Length: 116
Length: 115
Picture 1 (tube, helix red, strand yellow):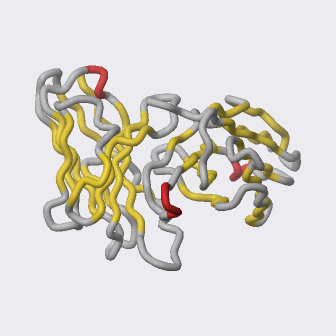
Picture 2: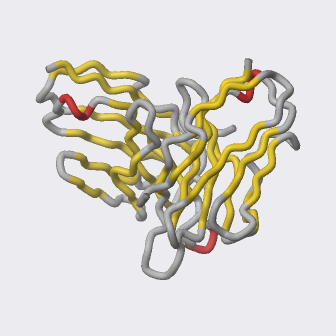
């Protein structure tokens, strides 16, 4: 498709389990972002990739959260030992970097994670 | 994490009325953005502002980048039912004038339009 694709759209898991969320960015977009949106709040930055490397991971809340983008396209957000407070919508966005463009973000529909 | 102060939190208006919402920050930004989010969707960019004092329009939407670089407002004129949704402001600081980097979002303004 033409937009940012995220899977799964919904994930229900039990406390303590491991979860992976996938993001497929817009083709050709070199930058990829993960945000977390809790109920009634705006999105909060988690991590940003430029190509394969994490350019800024200052928003990851703790070492249970990790993200990879091994080939500079698809990214996976990994959450270990999930806690109830991890319940949120996880949004992925991508942008095109380069001379002459503004690099604005295009968001996916999000993956809603519920930890019971 | 840090979020911008966005107001009002919610608005209930009649179709045809004008709407104004604003966003303030304790830090300066060199880009201000306004997004709209519908239920079950990701935020969609409405307007981007890149220079202090800039006033930009997109159809019935008008937004301004405050002179102090710590605030922005969004106006919607002649509201229609499809304007319903949550509106978010977002700021970005890019050292060296690059065009990428993390956004800091406001808490959102929930807009309800009665026909």
